[in-house]
Length: 146
Image (cartoon, rainbow, N blue to C red; front, top):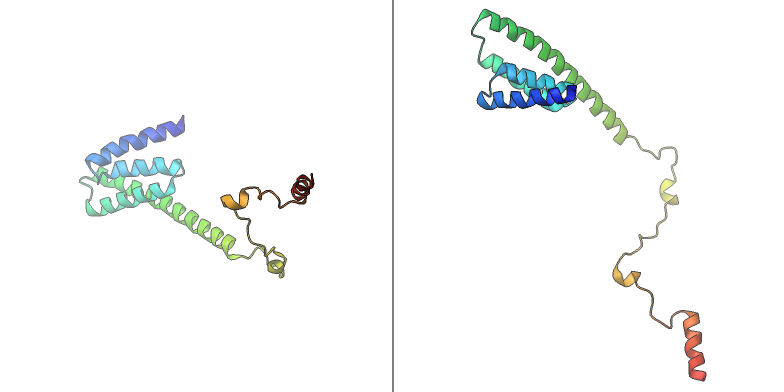
């Protein structure tokens, strides 16, 4: 399946990056695999690392420079999409937590039950001592009378 091929690609690229942390092609390919698995933060980190490596270590030949230019163009597209989606999610969640869910009910606090939560301590959960209930006290008085 596609998901397993992306996982395998990530494994192989991890090996390559372990040998050479500045390997542009491995960082790029791992970033694409993460991107296609919707792991956008990992993809962003790989793309940014690859772009930084390209700046610090220029291509050694014309064909390698052409490949770098193509990868850079593609990474820019991926990064713009990732950043745009992140901004949209941030804005969406900000609105969700910003709005009051009770604006249409101004007296919602007054209607809330002010009683404290029930205690869950062992003393409060055990049955009351004998003689407290009226049925128990009647039995106790009958025994005394007999």
